[in-house]
Amino acid sequence: KAGVTQTPRYLIKTRGQQVTLSCSPISGHRSVSWYQQTPGQGLQFLFEYFSETQRNKGNFPGRFSGRQFSNSRSEMNVSTLELGDSALYLCASSQGEGLYEQYFGPGTRLTVT
Amino acid sequence: AQSVAQPEDQVNVAEGNPLTVKCTYSVSGNPYLFWYVQYPNRGLQFLLKYITGDNLVKGSYGFEAEFNKSQTSFHLKKPSALVSDSALYFCAVRDGNSNYQLIWGAGTKLIIKP
Image (cartoon, rainbow over all chains, first blue to last red):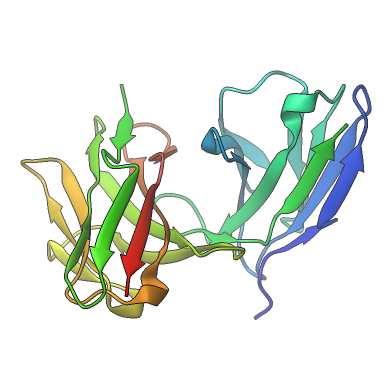
């Protein structure tokens, strides 16, 4: 099976712009989670979707939003970008909730200038 | 409040020695416990998990972890460390009483010296 894919892999944006990141889960996986990883803050949970419903949400401002489509693919959007949004954004998929492990994509490296 | 603690930011071990990376947790319901590893310039990978049953679970690359309910711990262990084990290790727990929200530790950098 193909792994989790994320596009684009690298992105450079300027402050105030918005960005959309895409994630395609492993075939058959219905749950998708998003994380922000920075050297100083570690791994921060953004949101988790299961069957198109947001199941959990982390402590991020409303500028961060996401959605999941009927084919389990997911997108996350960041509006009004700030310098502090520069990070590696990771997507992970799993078969479901609870006892299932997550499989991570390679991430999208976002740089805000 | 739910939490996961990895008390050591960094662990240094000589190659061939046993290694332990510590993790303790606090959740209200039954915990589902996970270890993940992030090698330099590579993605996060699943190592092992505890759901129920035998307290000692075995995972990838010779790693194992022991679930201790009374101490609310899930320490990662390996009998003989390899230089290639050098990586960032994350402990995570799902709380069975809280919509299965996955809570992550801050990560422990493991350095194996030849």
